[in-house]
Length: 402
Image 1 (tube, rainbow, N blue to C red):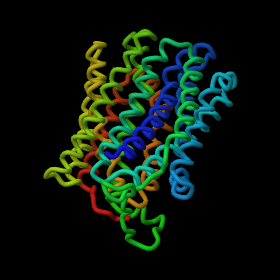
Image 2 (cartoon, one colour):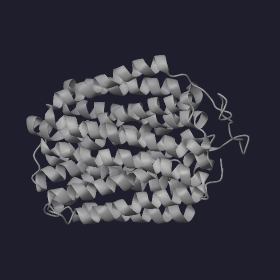
Image 3 (spheres, rainbow, N blue to C red):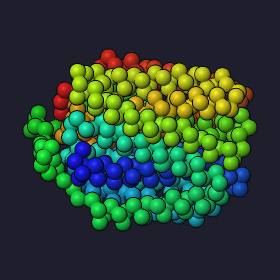
């Protein structure tokens, strides 16, 4: 990568680190908060689901604003707003309704971030470097979750939000004075060739009529289902049913560390295969298949384990292969819709946010109604992964369609 491109990818990846860390705090803090404020499991479930409601509502808006006002401006506003909300969470927590509202607003702010980054990548990153760019972007998100999982169990819940909220303010300062929006035309130049538009005007219908796009949307939906189960409920499951102490929950950082390295490795491997004899489509399908099928199998195995070390090992393997999606269907947006990738990604992320809205209440309901059994929760997640993988493999493409 060019120095300017590497700097762009690094800054955007750090924004995703903060994004992921801020959203990961609540699942780790909710046990302390629930005990202090006397929330039952359903109240905690709705609190965990408030964020995705806001996140779902702002994806397409973020994409449209990024195209109109520029990715830099939208990303600056997003990080500043969500950092402020995170920092003020200890104040909001004394009113459950206010806290729910702040979580929805946090989701709206964070939902603006990734479409803005995709817009920046579409003009600043060369085609044969995009797998790596997305690999680093997703990997840094995992690093953010890792930091939250490792640090938060050692803090009171109030300091969790204050610490990570303030980190966003520092990022905004660095971003404003360091980032210069560039375009690349050749590897030796400072400008990128913008792919030709296939039509003079793209209609909203065009984003929904292609099976190639729907295969991406549904693969993203499947990945999100598994991610939400692991992020929101695995710490709760480990604490309540495997007897893991609050301090020992810091070991939930291990799967995210592995996920980070796996995402970077997968990105470099994918770009190497593309520059070799593999077609772009075959690489996207391979990475998506690995990223959905293996995690599905891991979830089935996880629920049968009562040994903590084995449970952590299986979840770590699950997270490692889940990282392959970054250079699979997530990078596929820039292949099939290079001029509108921010919008297609916004639509995809909107659809992928749906599981996060109802997985909290659904999981609580399934566990309560089944007398404390978690088998239905993990079996459904595995089935969603298998179906998403089949649909993506059979309907995906890599040629420009928009």
